Image 1 (spheres, helix red, strand yellow):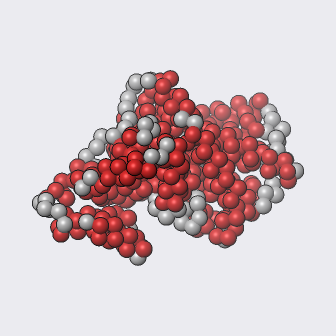
Image 2 (image 1 turned 120 degrees about the horizontal axis):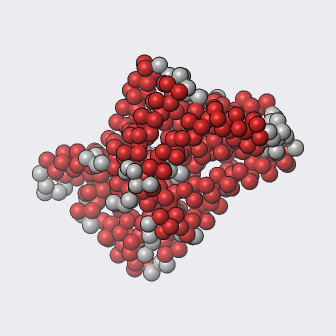
Image 3 (image 1 turned 135 degrees about the vertical axis):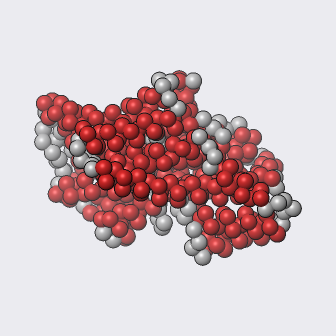
Length: 424
């Protein structure tokens, strides 16, 4: 059992095998050679894992994000942010942070935000005199907000793995996501003041009104998504489908930026991305099922309870585990593999599963830009040609800012649960 569920997957990951293949190989070897169960159980569990209404939201949100990213939606949001901040110190990086948070409330995809916002903001940041190291760190780090702020795809996956409510997790993610954005905003303003950089034109109410009018349709997407969910009009999955229709109508008929062929191209790319995600979901569910039927989670609970650790010490240990895992494994795979294993321990320690979900996603958001293998690092390096050493140095201050936010989110559960209790 140890050989098939621990040694085989570890060896395959060291060899660089895809995550889904690692999980499927370990699961198949366990079913075929260790456990006395029919092989049909493997097929049934694989297909049963993706037979979930909540998971339908994943391709819908991906598609909406693709449509919004192809058009000028992000550009219009940038214009609103720049008009609102005027010529204050740090207005340009501040607009970068604000745009990332708003764009994340439409797509929920971190790497897409890095690519979209980076292509719009890097040149203006360079023209205003911001150092390359700062530009690289800012663009690489701000996309991680989208892992936490709804409609976050990792939160949907966590909800499926932990049998939790997607609307509750969405409500719980709002304040932590805004907290991280606020911390980043304070830092970039301080940094600009330290360098003496002044951005943009003086504030103009007329300019802000024009920007809001041009970008009103773009800002409608998060209002429809979250307003529809908490107004009781539709479920998270239905809201994702509505967001797709809204994005297609806006980009095709309102802004007139995408042709029907381009809309179909977005759909084709979404199919590929959805397949990559759902095959990991299916294989991880099989792996988690094998861990559960062999009572490995309960053995872990007994082991930790024997150490008599307090809840804050358990949270500290789990934070360290997820920070390390997030450096090497993508967020969805980490959530799917570790959540079934750790959930009994979390419940036994009296930790709220919704709060724990936000703690997990914050850790894995940090992993998106944490050296050595953060996905956002490679997106920034490949698209914008930053040298890796420049990116690594640039993200150091942002890494400490995210870690400070993680400490607050971990040990002040109110930040995650206040909105949940207010709504429910």
